[in-house]
Image (cartoon, rainbow, N blue to C red; front, side, top):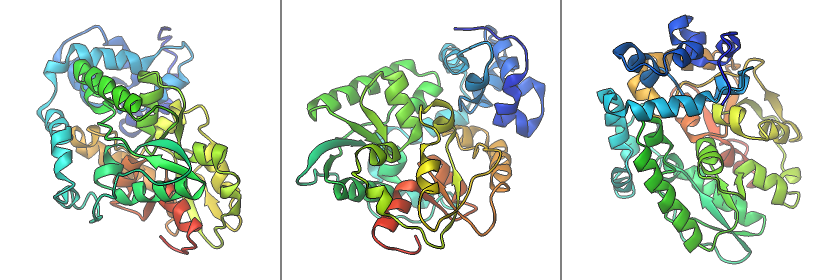
Amino acid sequence: MGECLKCGQCLSSCPVYKTLRDEAFSPRAKVSLSDQGGELYRKRLLQSCLLCGGCQKSCSGGLKTTDLFLEARKRFSRSLPVSKRAALFVFRRPWLDLARAFPLHRLLSPFSRPRGRSPSLSRSQGGERVLLFPGCLSRYLFPEILRSALRLLTSIGYSPVVPPFDCCGFAPLSAGMQERFERLKRTNTQLRERAGGGAVVTLCPTGYHTLTSLYGWGDVFSLPEFLKAHGGGMLETLRADGRRIALHLSCHTQNFHPRANLLEEILRDLPGVDLQVPQERRCCGFGGSFAVSNLELSERIARENIANFDQGAEVITDCPGCALQIGRRRKVSHVAVFLDSLARGFDEL
């Protein structure tokens, strides 16, 4: 599993440390406390880590810090703060199901703007079948992301199918709820099998990481990856004349996806685009339940992230969670919505 060399290389990749500049909140401090169960450990590890994977990617000792922190959270899951328990309770499946009949996102204002009803999840007609794993936010809070993804996949000749997948389980896993995660993994695996298997397209980088690295699923694609590989040149037909955009990649894309730079390549190849990619890519500070249990810190990280972008640029991201966080402060669109707007000839989103 590797070992911590105490070199400090992880400090430059940790959003929490870069904001607080406090060694006590650094990845190497959390690693050194990983075998301790005191209140100090629980407060620092369970509440102040985004599980973004930055320290793991940069670790010169090859330490799998994300696995280490997840295992530690499992051991101390009974010590979760009330705020994190509340966040997980809200985002359990039965509550999310209510969003189909009741606009849950209105309760989260100003976290998000009113969005409209979830699209129909029935199978499209014609073309080779592909499964779509939308993720919780795209399914319930941002249905326009799901609608755009369905249109894009249909436009390249595929028949997208959205089985009734449950939550991928990363949220309960990050809270130490290993049994809950295993149940969700079994449920989603069974649903994939019942749907006939085949390729799976994800709209959420955390979902992609969970399905590939934690479930062990094969034949899983991010939406940009699938469009590039199977779009038959559709991306090359798009134009972005006069569009000034800034790219925000999620941490899980940057740190876990094998083709982390693919979306930047796709956007940069668009004719007429004015693309801004910050020299220093920073976390948005969302991190799922992290934004609930660490609201002030999450806000600070978000403000530092937003300061990286030119004021006149529209922000494009590959992550619904990042869209939720950044959208409170700036105009932001998921890449599915952006590409769909170009495909349909819209000048603005």
